[in-house]
View 1: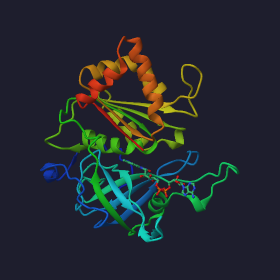
View 2: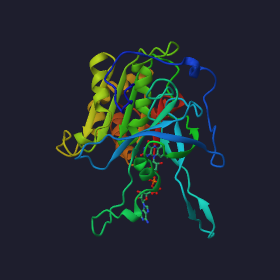
View 3: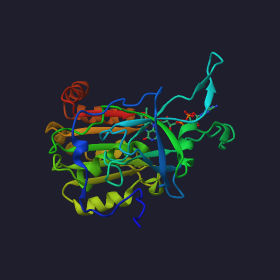
View 4: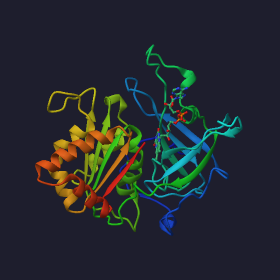
Length: 320
Ligand code: FAD
């Protein structure tokens, strides 16, 4: 019997993939809300530890290869059931977007599945400080509570902001908080774990990952295995806000960790690196303030610097 695939692999052999999925244009909106794709859940695995702030699950979906996508894209999921809209009419729930966490070949490298990395949205009552289950997030809890065989309605794929550059030599600087790591997992699998003859990654892959504590790390075993196998090509830096302090003695947030390497990052970007940001909206102001400060110290105009990078398609932001 074949062992069920799990959220992490530490086997660093390059997997053979059906390269037919390299052909053609990038798929976009193959399935709409009106005619979603019905898939089945294969597995749901909780990937956060007991002391994590919140619960995140790795969900493998059986797509049978019928809803193809490229790394960096998202799927829509329509939670089951209906709601009453503002006009008093019973309508289906709205679509929620989830970054696809596997490469186009899926976690079994056969193009028959796709994976999501979903954090349960919970509601904590500000008055009592207690969770109110009546107000928990609909779609994220549906997905994390799904069992093998659960049917899910999917739309997409969507998104063209977080695509990999065509130049397989360009350094990739990926900055994630929480489930923002999902698209980067699709990247690192393509870069390091798959044998794609038309995409031989030769650049530097640098991942900055911000979470609250060690138990909230995601896919860490796999990342450690890549770091070990590709010491010259892969760098991994964590910002653990509740375990580490920044240089000023405060909490170590993602921007503080990136700032430690600001000189190197500015040089890499000067030389054609691509910088990606994914995670909660709240991560960007702190990062922007830090970059603006660093740019100023270097005698650069921040706005012009960022505009230049955007113009050259080196700057990729998808936050939610
Ligand atoms: P909803 O039911 O939509 O509720 C939203 C929030 O409101 C929840 O926090 C809920 O607790 C709260 N709430 C509900 N009822 C009440 C009430 N009565 N009063 C007050 N508050 C209430 N998420 C991921 O986990 N992983 C991803 O990879 C990911 N990728 C994304 C990519 C993109 C491009 C975008 C736009 C979003 C992405 N998201 C991702 C977020 C995701 O789309 C959903 O927004 C998220 O899962 C919450 O949806 P939900 O249906 O669970 O919550």
